[in-house]
Length: 404
Image (cartoon, rainbow, N blue to C red; front, side, top):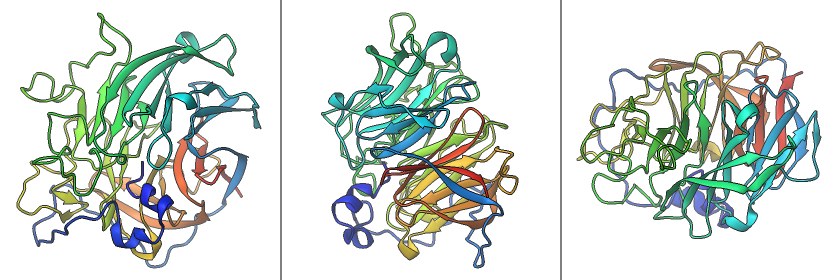
């Protein structure tokens, strides 16, 4: 999950000293990765966005994600890290869970039931997908189907799509999300521990593993296989490379999102000891991109004696000053009831909980400022079918951003 949650939950005092597991520091005056991107810095004076407030929709057990089926304007689904998915229908939380797989998962820290994604044809196929950590600590992406009731899933319909062994208990990634092309994108962290110490050049830079990557697959069973790999994936046919890889050089892409209007991709990648980052690419242009980890943390050289071929720098970074510890990647807002935020990226930090907004472009971010709002233990953002934006607190509450 967030690269520092495990330490935060176990011993808050260790955060400042240990970051995401400690490890040797590397410093260098090496140039920043990628010529096409420049990081933004935070504004010194940051006015809050006009007319925005947090409206609580309910309380849950360790909520970590909010999603909704395409076209269903009556329901939102809340993923609880402890193993259940809850339905909120027309503003009222249903007493019976949509899905309960608490008996299959290991929780908590950076493990558990971490996200869900509805197939684009969900209304017809009833297919949806979840990402969870099993009792052995490995990542599973599993397909389920809805029952005849719109508020219940068939637990017995489970079909395993992908299993990935995890060498450490952190940096699981955890997000499954359908892109504008109708394919399933899966975020996986680098395998955990400090500085991606999994051989040279580490998992993030190795095309021979899916760890430290965003994957792109067709999750439907085909020709006796659990899923298929799109022929236009960037590394299909390359010797020694995993064809599922779409983008690489990531440490822990806990939350990423697609702009529901443009299809642009935004990634919140959790840093090591110094820098949190946001990566951005226009629709389709993250294909084959190297985002630099472990050679770079943000724009800072982390292993100056190593190379990250063609690495692209983040568009926005921030340091761990002032209690910050771990980025919670957000969404680009398209809810027209929030005119001051339309077209702007909303994100935050897990420890501080303050919501921020910036306008992202190819190579830069501008107008980074505070919203004047905060969510304790900010675990995630999500959207419903209308484009309303939600923020989840690991403490229990789920909020919707609404007009003041």
